[in-house]
Amino acid sequence: MKRIIRVNTRTGEVIQTAPTKEDLKWGGRGFIARTLLNEVPPTCEPLGRYNKLIISLGLFADTNLSTAGRLSIGGKSPLTGGVKECNVGGNAGKRLGRIGVKALILEDIPEKDTTRILYVSADEVKLIDAPHLKGKLVDETFEELRKEFGERKGFICIGPAGEMKLYAAGIALTDDRGEQVRYAARGGLGAVMGSKGIKAIVIDDSKTVEPDYYDAELLSSTVKEVVKILQEDPKSQNRRKYGTLDILELANQAGLLPTRNFSSGQFEFAANFTGPKVADVIKERGGCGKSGTACVPGCTIMCSNVFPDKEGKKIVASLQYESVVLLGPNCGIGDLDDVAELNHLCNQVGVDTIECGAAIGVAMEAGVINFGDAEGAKDIVKQIGQGTYLGRIIGNGAEFTGRAFGVRRVPAVKGQAMPAYDPRGLKGNGVLYATSTMGADHTAGNAFETLKTVNPLGKEHQVYNSRQLQIRAALIDSMGVCLFIRPAFIKNRDLLSNLYKGRYGFDMSFEEIKRTGVEILEMERKFNELAGVSEKVKRMPEFMREEPLPPNNAVFDISQEELEEIWNIEMNPETF
Image: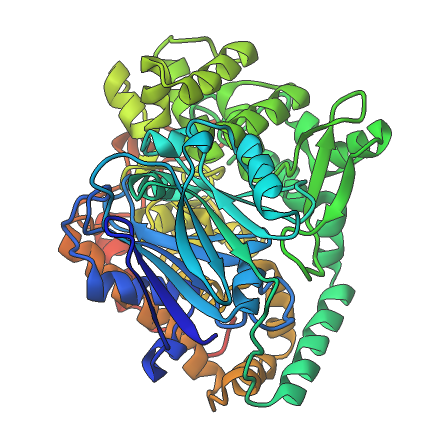
């Protein structure tokens, strides 16, 4: 990866530089954290001229490592007021790697609202006026881009929510077939992209740049070994069959499934959404429906799907655990087709399904519509795209919705809605939500994997485990890969060292590689502290500490003092 591209969205100036030795050490989330800390005033307005939208490739994006095409998108979050990074699939990451781009950095804001395309190829970077794309839904935008630039290009765009700079807006990516819509969904980064006047980014890799591997043979053999382990791993095989919904039944049984605005941990219609149930429906309906699809080129896990209607026509791709739970059980909606359609509508208007589902749940508690009102929920999502008053309230997220309607029970930390694990039923994730630099975000160190080894309702080991999981998540996000490839590194830790050696020539031990995760978290913490949004002042909602969660009747009872001790816990150098 041979160049960093900076685009000034006010002047149109494009500056391309070669990465320094220090730049090469950092990829994905790490590059974003370093750029924010060094270049963005922590107290700046998230939608103002001093924030930057940073699109960064992981360290292995230009290799054939499984899932390494994932892309990190970050900036100062409108929702949390702190650092935000989203790790996302689609084909854009691989294509940027093929043309030698390490990072795209969008700077400043236009003097007046505008709608433009950023076009990037091996030879050219330019801004193109695109008033015809203004207000278009995500699928409409991708269709127009294919007509203008050709089928086999990398596409990134925002929907109407991002153009309106709503705080729940995400950034959409797609694949070569136009089948999947993937999202850098969390934290309001779509609003940041909208503030830059960029509706879409087109990556043209018709002409490619040869990567400069340090030891191509070592890299190739290491990648092959990772693939072999993943293909033999039972969890990977299960994810191909059932996707991320495979955990839903266990989450419901454990009493941690957010239901009716986090008022219960179990949902009476949870059986409608389990991994095997959804896989069976996909198979029975046929048509375009299928399980076991990839979210990035070259993924060997293939945990995504295409969910069809009763006639076999696509409703949405892909149905994932977080989206299903926040739009389904959390809103009291028990019909699979209704939830799939809600997911599709969120994708089209360009909002995070987690944030939107949580906001609708808060609105339901306020009596705007009733729990279980699927048609009312669909209408609300449509109103987000239309920019009605109600749509703008919901489109600004759960915390804003709670303030607008006077609801105290708002499941959010640092301004961001909680994902699909109630922290009273899975206290390890409560620690994560309260201490993570990202706010309430399961991808920053999900404790669900400890469900069977650590008492989820107890306090013991939760803070320690969360520290280790957060370090690992930061490392994985800097590599630009999916967390689901971890079985390869658990089985053979030397594979990590071989990857760094083969790609860059870095002689790094397993412990040294893990230490980069600690350094990333330290940079993010420093930015957040300077921004005034550290965990010391942005705490767990009071109702989570006071209101017992059925069926286990637990509260989140890990003290603030214990939570703040998390940063004094040393990294465990032995585990991954």
